[in-house]
Length: 119
Image (cartoon, rainbow, N blue to C red; front, side):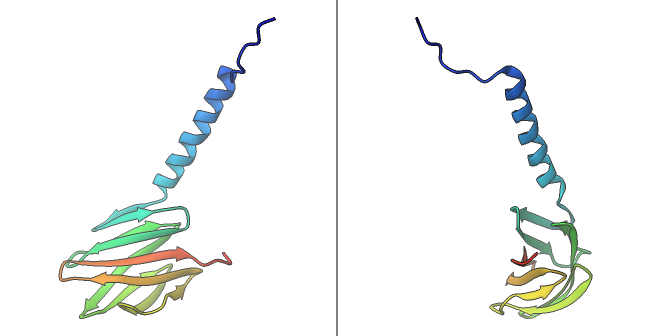
């Protein structure tokens, strides 16, 4: 008797493909921006704001906005809370998220927003 290799039925294969595509789209749909670019994972996003424009991004279910920047100090609003950050400072908590300032240039401000471990 000849044994055939096990195959996955077409219906199960299609269902698995559909679930994978739906999860991928859900992750991509969770981010939108104006005057900013985002790079997101499951629990953290890096947001690069363009200076001199009304810049904001919706990430991880909350809005992040650039309020102002002067020197190495930046004011952002994350989850409805205003934060003043400086480069190299430890993460500041806002609405269940940890926010850090990665870099400031004449043209861009880059922050990292991540979910706090308990949330």
